[in-house]
Image 1 (tube, helix red, strand yellow):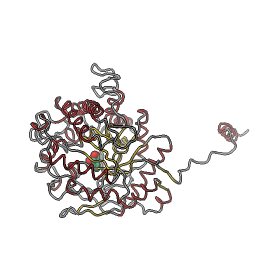
Image 2 (cartoon, helix red, strand yellow; image 1 turned 90 degrees about the vertical axis):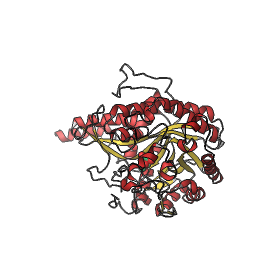
Image 3 (cartoon, protein in one colour; image 1 turned 180 degrees about the vertical axis):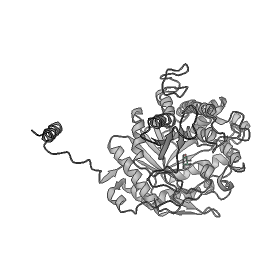
Image 4 (tube, helix red, strand yellow; image 1 turned 120 degrees about the vertical axis):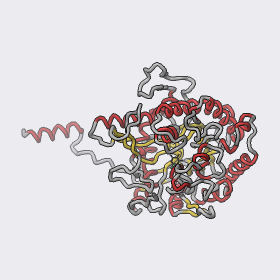
Length: 495
Ligand code: FCB
């Protein structure tokens, strides 16, 4: 028998059939269950005014720190003065949930007020009004207890040489006290709580990249200390919320679901053919995507961030940390490149690049890759934790609204496929309801389903808000509807 015929016969025998399997087909349609949370997300400092008594409030006043010197108090969305309007926007765009933060420094403007537990009456009234408006509109609140900003009495970027914010040991119990008080006050309105938004992003941006307060470069030990204290603060906050929120706000039998919100990137080696870059990507993925989840879900404490638990201060299954997440909050936007070339971050021993990646993927106005398939990569990474997942952020900077509908549907399609494959996904929050203050980039990147006029704060829906409304109403995304959309066009970067 000729050799190639023998090989062909062997292949057929191995397949157990005389016909080759058809290639895997993509589903025509994906669907989401009823009760799925369809929402959008925001953060206090990005849409409120009057948070000058935070580290970020001080930071934005520091010359050179924010693009074009912009400031959320000038030309911002002023959300607490537009509550009825924003709730109407949520309704009109078909959303049944809203993720936002309650601001620690607004409720307790001074250390004395915090120590004496004397909350600010106007702050309480404003948040009460927001909760009441959401309830009246039957919109489920999803509340973040800390989204990057800290009160200036714990974090003062004018003294970067001193321990800041999460570096200070006393902040762990103070944060837990804030969580417990917020949960006691609003537990009747809230069942979904998120403790800390993106605990790895703030230390990396603040101590390694210099883009967030306290604005240091490559101060890795301080960044890691901040990250460790966030893990401990999260665990104590979890316990405090569980103890204080004993009211089932929506009648589903649960009083509180408490989780942490992680920013997960699809981490790739800059050169996939270079083993050192592949190893660098493994290290970055571990530190960025996994370290804190290992700590607060399994109680596995890798004190030296070296990827194993055999160090002198490492601990497996620490009961003070384990089991402190009822769900995983996942923010997914894009990919990230790791490499052993360029500026190396000590300890992780890798260089990191997250924008302007040199590949052929389409880009957002923020120069991030548009990479819907990456969704599945980061979901697969957290599958082993066995917890329900909420997509707490996903969105695109697209000032002209030319790519948003495709971005939204392609990402939801990937999510729907993951759900069909067994992932327990409870909700999706688009970032963001409104154009807002994008941290160091000021008002430049426009993520909103709605625009905000800088002079009048008037809101207007972008066309993609109606695309979102249609998906939320039907609970379905079809391939046909994605294929009918125009292809991605090059971004309109604002810098
Ligand atoms: C996330 C932040 C959010 C916003 C988006 C674009 O990392 O949580 O506040 O800045 O990115």
